[in-house]
Length: 388
View 1 (tube, rainbow, N blue to C red):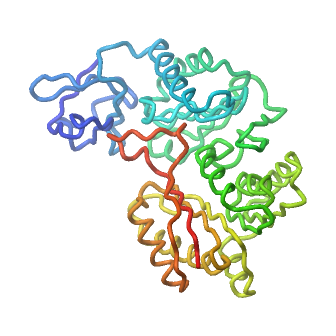
View 2: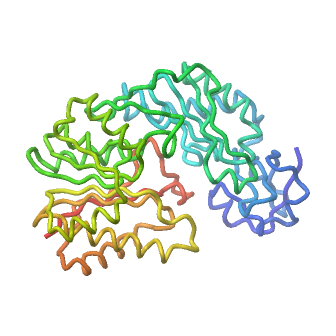
View 3: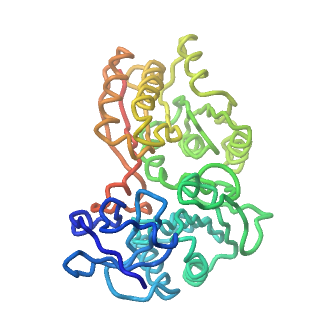
């Protein structure tokens, strides 16, 4: 294994698992993309083993701080530890994020478990190079009947990797049905956003549904396959879900039927911004609104533009909420941090002419663990607000 020497060590000493290209003593261009390397300081201190990518700003991602073999046994230990962590708070749940990249000390690897099906993402060149032993460990620890590779994330393009989707074990002719809170959902791991379902909002959906109250009315904006809408409907709320995707709307309707709440759920295919503007124009009002958009902020470069979009859509939603009604609003953009999100909502309240109180500031579900020494692992903000 080749050695890499750092000229700057403050980040890695602080426990962050990334090494940037400008922290290296020599250019990483001499290394093969995805190769394993040992990382040292100029004084010869060993910092760990990681994999390198000479094409990206993040030149090295640390896999371990110890001298150990990066083999199937290594992956089995890490995945088993990730599973044990989740068993502390999930008990008998059969569907959850089983591996969350840096949050589980396996940078570049995402594993979502949907009952007997697992959906796997290899996001980096280094993890792609280790994919064979990683998949062996996933099969050994999680024992799935179906394994899907969802290697279609745009981040793979930045790593110089092709985009692909394929089933590598079993068949998905019958889609997995998972339990989430008090509801069940059919998940298509080969299509849609992320790996087929938003597991990270599970606890937030439950918390908001408890507050909403039976007999109330709600909007679920950017509803995708209806997780928020169905969860609310199970509590007696009448919900309209809105999404621009024909496929998502069809799956949302199917999920409402699976839960016997199709009488309380209706779904509309529309551009959410246009739909909300029209609702404001028509002077309609709802007891509660869920606003869970896709990431508006793809990079720091478009942060200002994205903040304007968050401000506009949140202001419109605040106008649509009845007096003392509820708004659950989210941002899954890492670059839109909690402070900026709070400021944006403050401006939205001003624009809407509303008084807004923060009931609860929430984050991602605990199967998406946040590594405090790697703030990039905390990305989801979900604020539950009272609007008057």
